[in-house]
Image: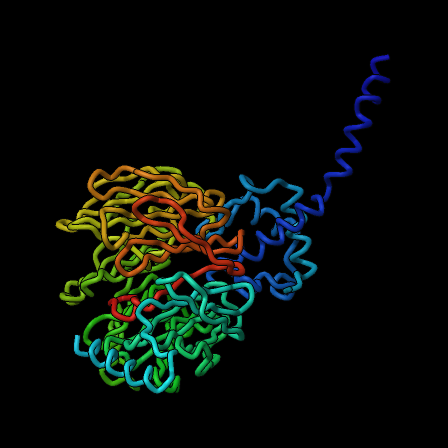
Length: 107
Length: 390
């Protein structure tokens, strides 16, 4: 009985997890806006670099996903790169890093 | 006065000949539409747009300086583009790609030279203001002489000088351009970690670089360059945990009132007040977020402050006598920049994520008008033509 209850309770939770593994379409738009305009204040609006390094697909080639994820989440010591974990959740950070690694098109 | 009379008599001539377009540029300016590589030419008497100029490239961190006659704006783009704009014609006069990645620039005291500070390759390029012909290149080399540092905080200083800071190198350089094709450089080393921006006091005397990598500011007294660079507020915030800085503060529009200066703290939700009689910390004013611009309203005891995300929908006004926040405004999402009219009765604010300029009355603190502008960032009025260090 107890086990069945757990299974039943966990079903909707599983659904939620599956749905939230990527941000909603609306949120994706907000994240790309943030990337271009707010990350862009240091990395350049076209991500060609500024005070911070370029974030183009070529510039990130060979860098592990996990390294990029941790850099965004926790920031980079001794540089102006701040930790974004207070503003972005893990799903959002992973989605943004994936976009960067695949190359973000300029409008 | 004499020039006013001349202008009046000239306009009289032209009016009688049927031309009604003659105007001065003293109430004009530009607003950067950063996402579209475009600037709007505006005027702040009637608060209107006069022209729209496209084709300026990547303007993600664009800034501008003005020719001394207030007719031409020189716009410095992120992609290394240097564009000379004619405000009266609403058109590009000349445009050169002068580096891979630039951050800002300055115009010399005599108005004849334009200097551009570059990230890639790190250094300063000097141009003829008339023709935009390259006159000299100053590579910002350090360490073994091959590494090049990004250059920030470039300002014009009296006596044919440009002053700037080297971000990675932690140095301040003074370039004497009496002979423009052969600049004479004075280097000040070990001024502090990661100078991120700098300013010159309006009298052209003190150059101050804000430091990101450590506490305090690096200061050079240009009346006494032989005394070297000194550190001010070295103990500010020592031992305290810093808050994340989601946007670099700017020192361009800094505020001096009487014998005190107001500057953004780094990693703290505070505006710092510096006592200029002995360069000590006079007060810390708690504010709404990480300050970005801390700007004096020219005609009052007000300092206006905007903030980094996630607090960038807010602007606060500080009273310079009481050091109290006297007003908190919510102009809209992502207030990036502010520019006061020359005598301070109004302020223009870029509300980026609402695609508009909000114009506020600085006495009533009410919005008086707004202009539609796509993703506005920097606002630069032609009054800057006559201010040292801008």
